[in-house]
Amino acid sequence: MDVRRRNNVVVTGRADGPVLLLAHGFGCDQSMWRLLVPALSDRFRLVLFDYTGSGGSDRGAWNAQRYGSLEGYAADVAEICEELDLRDVTLVGHSVSAMVGVLAATAEGSRIGALVLLVPNPRYLDAPEEGYHGGFSATDIDELLDSLEANPGWPQWLAPVVIGDPGRPELTAELEEVFCAADPEVVRAFARATFLTDSRADLAGVTIPSLIVRTAQDAIAPLGVSRLVHEQIAGSRLVTLDATGHCPQLSAPEATARALREFAGVVNRR
Image 1 (cartoon, rainbow, N blue to C red):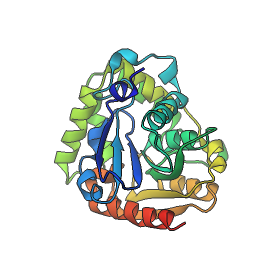
Image 2 (cartoon, helix red, strand yellow; image 1 turned 180 degrees about the vertical axis):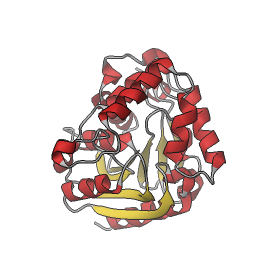
Image 3 (cartoon, helix red, strand yellow; image 1 turned 180 degrees about the horizontal axis):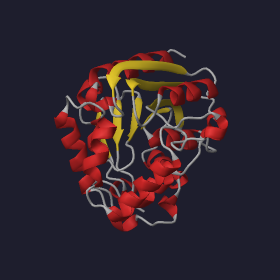
Image 4 (cartoon, helix red, strand yellow; image 1 turned 120 degrees about the vertical axis):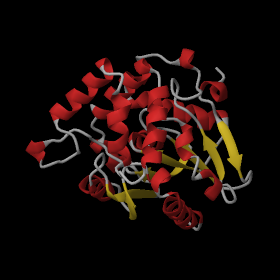
């Protein structure tokens, strides 16, 4: 199996620097990191990739069974680390990839030494009986999944919600373009794995240094969710960026890069 080709792996930055493995979120690809790469390349060895079925990956290697759960995406991460013989990796997981990172980091023999959970949400579905607000009601989730099945115009309404800033139409347009380029079958499977999964119980198993990065206003990952993630991961750090929306790597790349640099400095002094 050619993992590098399967996942369209790109390695850039400082060859002898600490490794950052950048994992994109639902419906996206590695282009979501384009504004962070220049800000981090002088210090870090950056490993970018597309999950199987996404972006420039090998679509023929995708299958619905493996990628019907977050474990399949965590397997991609583990296989990339093994193929490149990466060790003490800091995995930066955006959105649902934060939970993919949690799964990968707690797996036996993991090569991941630290986690950056960028706007994480371990359960998008509200649980009113538990007093938990994940951001989406059961009706919201049903309508989202139905739209992915029947409405090819879903990127036009979802992208503005994700970006969360009407004053940045260029970011919304960029995300719409990425969503539109995604394979419909892959998107539907990834959506079910993302929005129907409850990963809250996995958080307590994280024992490595972890940073939770959130924005001040995020419709996809409410503030209470990131607070819960912080409370469940012992010793984790929580940073709130002065930014809006669910893609701070696009809307606030300087602040996001600064948070990563500061956290890496703490981790490397251990």
